[in-house]
Length: 221
Ligand code: MN3
Image (cartoon, rainbow, N blue to C red):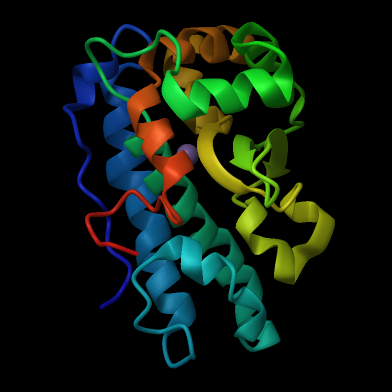
């Protein structure tokens, strides 16, 4: 097995008007596909060759020879982050608010769903340059918000320390690279973040919260 581009679980146009079809087509078919191809190149002939779960690989980047680590960090990170991103969005009937254990955890960690959204939107808006905002589960069961630069994510903590954010297990991620929104929103990142809440699939985020791994692919890991 190698890293594989997961199929989008909906049509390119499914997230309109909040995220346009052309952006989705380029983002999935060009950007994410390139991360997958380059991630496979980066691990060729190493101990990580043959892994198929990118989130697992993000936690093992430190096992690579040092000259391989930058390419692996950027591209395996890109693969992991986008795989989660596609899986926690959807078209009709999405948005709204979480329910069940996830809702309880959000309320106890942030005070309310609105307070969480405000904290998360601020993390997304204030990430300078390219990167991601995350909602993640900490080891004590609490939820937290953090953000990372480029294609880094909290699972990379063993390799990159504080640059990986808080070290939580991400269950919701928002791509704030310009390629994720520029066609529709240009420089208006806060408008993209506000619109994005309408396409979040909270049932999926709830599943990620209750599972050990949420790599977004069809495999069980
Ligand atoms: Mn992206």
